[in-house]
Length: 361
Image 1: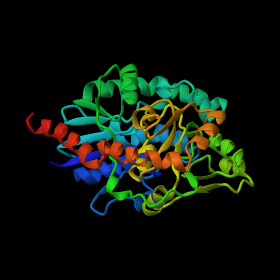
Image 2: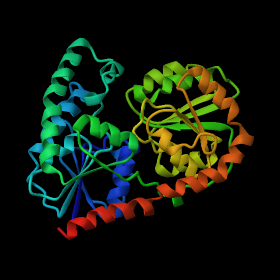
Image 3: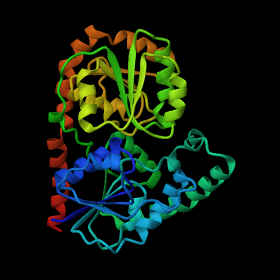
Image 4: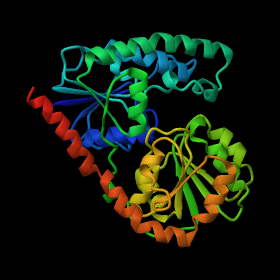
């Protein structure tokens, strides 16, 4: 069975991108995307074929270019590929879908602009850009709803949190298959003297909140791993604080070493749809301090594999003091047991079960 995975773009490496690459590798699928960078290329398996539709032409404003240009790039290439089953991930990729084909929409989360009214404020666009974005929502939300209603045999998503949002946004039901974690790649080495957070440097990740909390705890160390538009702002925010370090463009191996050697992970995103960071840490035997909202409530068991807290500076400081070496050691075995249910083998079994249904149709 030839499988094509259509994904918006591979311009940076985050949880969603890791997910796409792992899925393609496990299912022996080709990836069709509107561009990928050298930083992402080193994460791609040698056996995974990438069909690049070309990088963005509209570079005057990259965020708006991604929103407007990428859907049309997929649209004009919709008849270029012919697979037995098509898996569409992201928002723009669905514009390459056609009727009368075996299509699965793996909707990790509905487009944030479609359900989160605060997302425009979070991005801090200027007035003209906000007007353009509102017109975008009016036009593309209806268009995408029609595509989803008419072109897809089934919708799969990654969490209960995402399932609820899909139901309210598109009025469609979705099957849950969580993202795969290749737990054999993660090992426990030691409980180090630093906390670790990983993710794109975007406002909704609340990294500035973590920086502010750790600046008030000079004896506690934080390592932030990620890249994105907030990088310079975070560097300025960190200032002279020598207990906070920001690292970018790490290889998979170096990131795994950080998981192996940290004391615990800490993860405070706004209403995250799933979040791989807590589970990647648990695969290395490390507990997680996580925001008590969204997908974090599905990956962290409060008091057993970490702590679920309100995303406030006061509560973060309190949790950091609570999750010390003694508490981290106590939670280690719970973490290693819990993460097994998210192992790649278990998730791929579920995917193959869904794909096998197409063989009988």
